[in-house]
Image (cartoon, rainbow, N blue to C red; front, top):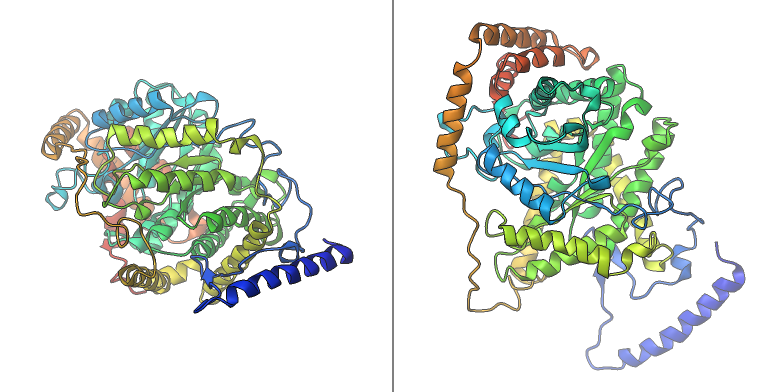
Length: 569
């Protein structure tokens, strides 16, 4: 808080500043600029102490963690560079993993990282030989459907020292069952493993039109995974609260924050119904936060995100554990901000985003590659994306101080405003029945569609400038060849391996274990029963069932697939 004398001096300084503004007002056709953030928060021309006078003295590492989770930040532990990657077969993806590790990707303490993007058939639970997905096998992600694929991808790694994170959505539960069974073949117990499941199928479903299990089924599968991981894999981040996809579909920073917090509230309440105490599982939520181009608002969003989470966990869910109150952030720089036009400009964009993310105090970063608007990232492009992180870390000086923007009149004021706007959105969702209800009835989908239309209109009118796209264009086209994958060959290899795999197993045992999965899914009527399905899936994985076979057993019982644009409760 500021003293009366301080505020009087501030008022006097403001009056002096106003006199200088009079000079501008005398200019012909001058108009005071009116600006706002991406979230629509009006901006003042200048910020002063009075704008942040309610800011309490807070140090990094103390509740509510606005200034960061630790007393020392990157001076002690640099952020993790975790590059999402994957294409073609598991063998092809492994080569990219090795390249990224060599160039500097890694977790804490030099830990190996396998943050694997999965292809659409694997994500949705279709077999690679299904005619409906013929041209999607290995497309923009790796095809992973058997324990053999996991062996090809991860067989040479020391699994307890490797952070494994397959980026599946609808098939997270059978994928985890496969990974546990794979680890057991190596003589490992579940409690030795670390990594994460995406386990955020509802977000993928609402932001795309990929056929998926019904929302009610997805809800049960999410809680099932959380309960199993909490009780059996204590180092596993069971759920990634993915704001990234909302940001990519034009949600504002405040909307992204409010939607994710509303989702977290619903999910935690479901887990409580399933017999878990918040302090048992809350600390293992992780995130995939979107990082856009509104530099200062994105920094403020990250600070507000931590603060709002800490308050919710403490005041609403009565969490006592410090870890439950500390929200760990993985940030992905915005892919939708990258342009096909003048793609080298994208290096500047990702540099600003990495700088904003680190000034905001994140724990982990995926940095977009300059050619992602053209196609799959090339080796040169992903190396450059890693180098952006390394330059910021080693050459910029920003990691030398924890929360270097703390105390900025502007940043503190904006952090407060983002939190307030996020709370409004969260409360609006709760008033409409909660996150799950707003998924079912299409309210969140409609909100995102409105924002997408508004963004497109503003770009088309030139009211939102995108350099190289609608302003500062060039006639000549720079030649940056797209990174290409022989999908026909990848599919041929995948089908060959799949056929061989199915011939190598006891198909009577396969049928028996899949029948058991169906039986358990039939009896899984309420969230309170969470815990009955995963043992059956583990038996199926041990029997060499494919991921698609396990997922199809679930869907056969629960009534098939649906699409977010057509679903009505």
